[in-house]
Amino acid sequence: MHTLDLYAGKSAIKQIQQFGIQPDLFDFMLGASGGPKWFVLAGIDRVIFSEFFARRNKPLDIIGSSAGAFRFSCFAQQNPLAAINRLADAYSKVTYSDKPSTREITLSSLELLSYVLGDDGIAEIIENPIIKAHFIVARCKGLTKFENKPLQMTGLAASAGVNAVKRKWLEKFFERYVFSHPTSDLQIGDPNAMPTYSVELAKDNLAQALLASGSIPVVIEGVENINGAPKGMYRDGGIIDYHFDLTFGPAKGLTFYPHFYPKPIPGWFDKSLKNRLPHKESYDKVLMLVPSEEFIASLPYGKIPDRKDFENMPAEQRIPYWQKVISESDRLGEAFMKMVNDPDIANKVKPLNF
Image (cartoon, rainbow, N blue to C red; front, side, top):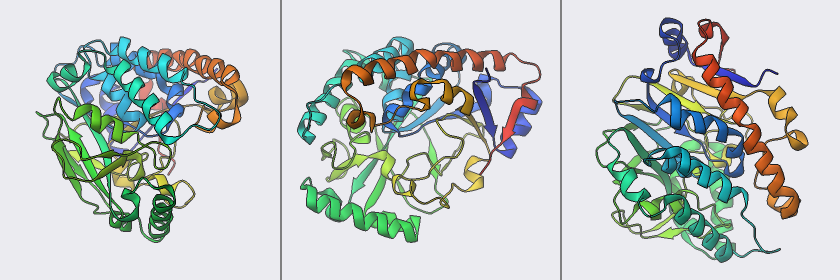
């Protein structure tokens, strides 16, 4: 079975034609929002973290929002394979009451975070000289900063409305904050000219920033007044940067991007806007690893897991399904490592289809 598709921008294809797929071609890695969709990438993460980038000796800036931030908190720990396995196992077994409150879901998220980070994870992430983690978080403005659901939902509806007209107008409701590794010089460019504010990761704010990056509006409580950042309410980084429409510097290398879909969706509110695609220049130097349609069709229920599974399946059906997807995803990791060693790999990379 054909399991994995590789897509790349023009500049990325040229470099792969010249050098193949080598770890040192990449200076950046992206991790998208998407909650349980991540399970389909778990097998790729397992080999990327523990094999492909394992012997790297030059810095790699890894930039994640929401579930991507949680994954990358694993990658930057000293034993990334053990950490990513903790995340996959614990997240796949999460259960809630029939009608969970935001408090219940928030406490569950805190428990998951604590388990994934363990006793030493925070220090290991901050002190890692090679794998430099960055977590994207949205700082709320206007009604979106309130925990009161009717007020928050009114603010979200207004956000969706202005975003539908012009993506840049989203900045009226949310500001992009990047909590960055203390020794990184990462620069982020936004073709929509939404500003990026940077805050240094520290031992007293890393867990706060990570929780905030996955704090889905209305579902999970936001994180207020993160240490070292301007006062305010911080929520899910995917609101602005769901699947990304950004460029990165100052390093000149390529961006490595395992993703669920061949067409990224820039922001959370763009999911229903079929014509809202990322700018081509944002993906010029990107290599995307994407599960094939054939592979997805072979999964239970013929689909990638998603948050609706919490509502549509009882736990005794959902948990085995999610764990089966995690297990099957190892085939994607194996396929990628074979591709890396394929002398004809350049002819198997497809141009981006957006």
